[in-house]
Image (cartoon, rainbow, N blue to C red; front, side, top):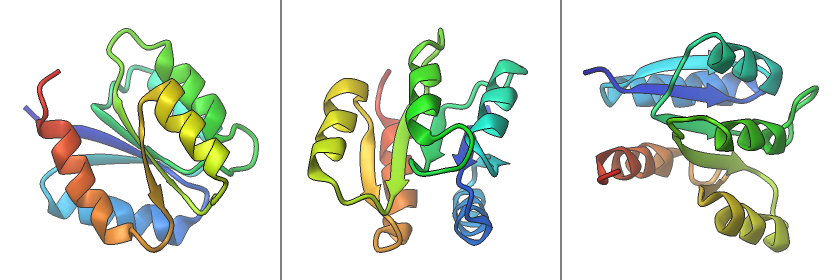
Amino acid sequence: METRILVVDDNARVRELLADMLELDGHVVYQAETGQVALQLMQGGLNPRLVVCDLMMPDVDGWQVLASVEQMAERPNVIIFTSLGDLASIERLTERYGCTVMKKPEQLREVVAAARALLNRPN
């Protein structure tokens, strides 16, 4: 069975690089350039096993995407890939949503390993 991943980032270069790296790791990757597009994809039936999402985006931000993901019947794992360095926000993300937070751009290569670990753990 194919593993679907949704990458959400308004920075095309980062989004495409992440998508390429995850595809090379054997995943089927969908891309959304805004949170609004991500919500439309998921409301349209895309049920990813993993969402890799930036926090700071125009229109619908990563916080709103997380709130929608939390309401899904089959909740995907989430990696927040952000340049936001606010410790309180990061703690809130991990405590409230149980997601993995990774620092952009320093941990770009580590996202694939984190994705693999999340997707391989039992539900």
